[in-house]
Image (cartoon, rainbow, N blue to C red):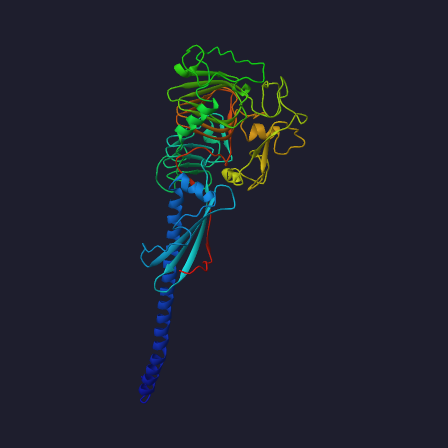
Amino acid sequence: MVKKGFILPMLTAVIVIFFIIVPVIMNWITDDTKQTVREQKKSIAFNLAQAGVERGYWKVKSSTTTFNSVMLGGVISGYNFDTVYNDMPGGSYRIRISSGTQPREVIIIGEGRDSSSKEVRAVKAVYRNQTIAGAMLSGSKINPSGSTTIHWGPILSWGEINLSNGADNVYFPRKFSKQLVKPRDNSLNPPNTDNLEWWSAYEVPELPKFDFAEIRSSAAANGTLNCGSARSSSPLTPSATTYRMVCNCSGDQNKCCADKNTCYIKNIYADVRYNQNLLWYWDEGKSVNIENTGVKGSFFVRGDLRIDGDDCYGPWYKVNGYDAYGGYHTCGQALSSESGPGALFLNVPKSAYTDYAKIDTTATNQYPGDLGISSSSLVYQVGACDRTYYYQCNSSCEQGCERGATGDDLGLYGFLYVGGTLKIYGAFDMYGAAWVVGDINTGSGNNASIFFNENLELPTLNVVLIKSSWEEIKPSTYTW
């Protein structure tokens, strides 16, 4: 029971507290609302800056001419902070596009300005035009099997990636598919990835569209179009340093594959153009059989390709008048040594170690160029290997991390495109990348290793931009 005389003071106290607290609460609500509005306006400016980067991205991708102009230091009208765009609600934005510090690199800066608060924010993105973004890629299915081994770069496919016959037990490189990576994933139900080795239902980057007309024209000009013989008993065992295969020919069906469906080539490495980094092209409808490879350049086979024999590209053969800059040399004269004329050094991509996250530990030589966990060397050596001196190259790594001894040479130093099926029944290692539209089949006891070269440049009809970095930066001082 409340004593008489206490009700009025208590009521007065409650009223006083109410009048003290309510303004504080209202002030807090007002400040919080203002802060929310400020953050919202900042977000508007930020989103506008992002829109600027996106618009710049599509401008650079619009044509190879536009990209090449930027690489030469050209200024694109409307994309040098010289135009303010007002096509987005809430404010405006502007864009600057310039070349980067690295080859084939472009910098895109977007600045957004909120129309009411005048808040300005800026975003900077760096992209690299990487024509070939993976060691193996395809617009359809990819079926790695047997002892086909891929190093330093991912597999990218717009169709399924089907691992079989031993390839399903190899946990490198990374595998990205717009559909499924089998047998890792057998449905499109999330999460569709282990975030280490494979990703199904992934937004695979745009693939290159090759300018086959330009590539064919280049091959015709250099005498590397439709090379080979129409007969399987191809008499290509030259003894001179001026040997050139029969190419670009027509009319004589006994000498040239131009009038036949199959082109037979033996000892392509003996052609004096073997190390001139040329484009070699075979028309659609032609199957190509090569015995004994060894070329620095790129092969574009629009039909099927079969490879037999040895792979013979390297700087250490010294017999039959060979010199390091061209000329005939004999392949298969046993392994090289440190006393030879030199080794073949392959540049290892800076991000190579990311393709081995599933298996990478503090141990070395788990893959070619491995220096320990999340670390790889700048170069990897093939050939002329004194195993006590060159730590990147040893028998343990050749047999273990390459799934077979690579030896001391390569079959191709460049890019391989096969429009049909690729069959490998001999030694064939590559430094570059491969796009095989059909299946890849390797014979028993033979192996094929692909070492990814991230700096391949080929004639294409599109620009493939890969994001290198992204960050928010301080806005410029240019007047709006």
